[in-house]
Image: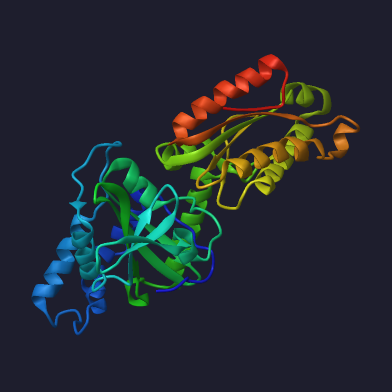
Length: 350
């Protein structure tokens, strides 16, 4: 399966599984998914059909916390066999590094090799999905599920945390739901509308369109990062008092837009607090990271907001560079931001 057209919308795994059951996929899909196996159609091979039913039934989402769960520990050769087996059941199977969003393939000699694409390219996206099912699987060391839309198609995405040669990955299986599994076009419209609304409410900050604090802790905090930045809008409360709430909102919108433009598309900008933005970067050279941070300070100063007159918007930036989890990096960046505030600087990095 190649990239699938329009930008998809996603649903959290709990509601995704509920809707998945509501529309009868649990029974319909167990039969329909068998169509992908070579030479097998539903009912033509009872043993094969039962194997599919068992796999789908066992992939109901699990709860837990990092470090919990009974997950597969595979050699590269064993993982290659599992991928080959799953490819007979699903439209696409793949192995992902959740932190870097890279896609890997396993060669015949057992080499786990990174491909040229990123995981979100499958959905014709330019950045990490708002609701990354593999991030949830990684966080809980378990299996997770979500629904995605692309154009007029519905996709069910399963993901399971695995370790291959002692390295952590997510193994994804993607299934395109046949039209016959839906009752009508009305069902499709209703489902898509519900998913779009839930996605935005869950992970997008309404004012700035940046990802929100919940997104950081549910999707990023436990992943590896090479750089984390905290950007504090200086004196926002005083600006609000002086120029009004509308001006304050415009300051935040403009700052979010400017910061996103200063970093790469693949870097994630979150509104972490009322006047604070966090940026999480992976696979970024230190020189580029420092440049992006400095540009954020300089470009924010160029923001022009009519209500402010000649008053300039400024930010204080604290940053950490070095491989660690995003949550640990955030704590280190916060320490640098506190030093910036104490010393009257604009930017510090450790």
